[in-house]
Length: 221
Image (cartoon, rainbow, N blue to C red; front, side, top):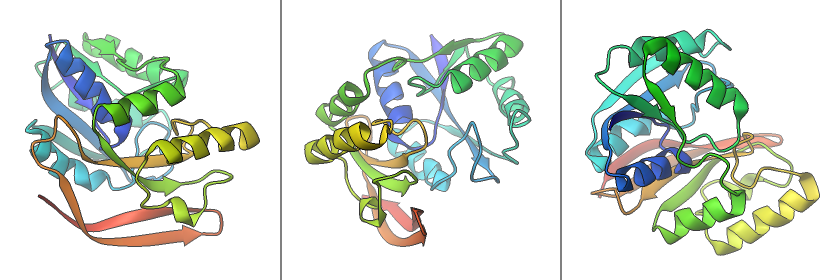
């Protein structure tokens, strides 16, 4: 099976690649769409430029395109990219978002390929623990939910972090895995990366109750 991977550089898109490679499937391309609208319903925008560097670390070619990020219209931008690729299907890191899953399936149907979601309906805590156990180094680079303050930016997910997220879920009903936009991540190292990502210059942007860790400069190490 020859597939492309929708790719943000975050934990779930990379872990989906990891699982798919264990199937013995070929990941022919990474597909990253850079939304001009940071509040895109479909595509992550925080540090999306680093997917080019991660492409080198993973040794998988990348297709990198911009999109206005307008709701529903952005799907056509994805369609234009996928119909140019010689693939049997697309994988994505959707966990429980019917909005994302159904729209990706719709585009795949139009292009004539299959949609695969390797971590679909994984239990949130179990998924985080599996990602850690596999050896991925995951940094939180965006927060926008009750209980997640500025101190979470730049934090590497570990067992203590997971326990705190579980407590916040009890108190605020957040999605532990961050799929509701509570937080976004960047993978810095892992078993399928041939080189790790080294951050050389970062900047925190904070606005009252949400913020981002913007990577200004990074390299392979």
